Every structure is written in C-alpha cells, then in structure tokens.
Image (tube, rainbow, N blue to C red; front, side):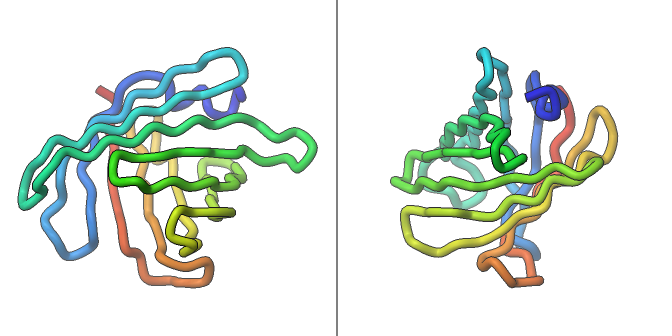
Length: 137
C-alpha cells in the first residue's frame, strides 16, 4: 500500500460535470493496516438538494499487481474498481457497479499538494463526465 501513502491526510476539492459550475468537497484518507479508507463529503450547494457522502476502501492485490477499490455512497450507488499505478498516473477500470454501467478514470498526481481526477462514463469513452482538482488541506 506504499503507493497510496501519497493521499493520507485531508484534501479540499472542486469538481463536477464539465461545463457546469463545480462544487466543493473534502476528502479524508487514512491508512488502517493494509487498507486505505477514504471519505468524501460534499455539502448541499449549487442546486444540490442533499449533501453527498461516499466511503471507499482500497487494498493491494499482489497476485494481479493492482489496487482494488470498493465504495458506496448515500444515493445507493456502489462500485468495485481495479486501479493500476504507473508513475504519477492511476488508471481505474470499473469491475462492477450498482447500475451496471462500467466506466474508467484517470487520476494524475500533479505534485505533493495537488491531484486531478477525471471520470469517463464508459470503458472506452474519451469524453469526461466528471472532473475534479484537489489540494492538500
């Protein structure tokens, strides 16, 4: 899990659908043995009727040389994603989701205090449906 140590701590983020006003969120990461826990909180804002909460657990799958993330949110959404790390870039590929729609994501570690996340609605899409930039708090 040493590759995920980068995230431990608190982050302030701005993100959302491209071409729409971004919303703010906070993300907290903590290591617990061989598990990284992640909590995302976005208070109700800019047209959101309720706050958004998500909890994610990440562990390393040595047999397949990848990270496995499992998460769920307060809307009933859940997913399992396989993540590979190459240099400063993480590539996530959905394995299973609540709605059956599999997507992919790219996370880029810009430097020690900033990362970007880009989500795509399908496994092959090249047009993002979610973008965020996070800064260490």
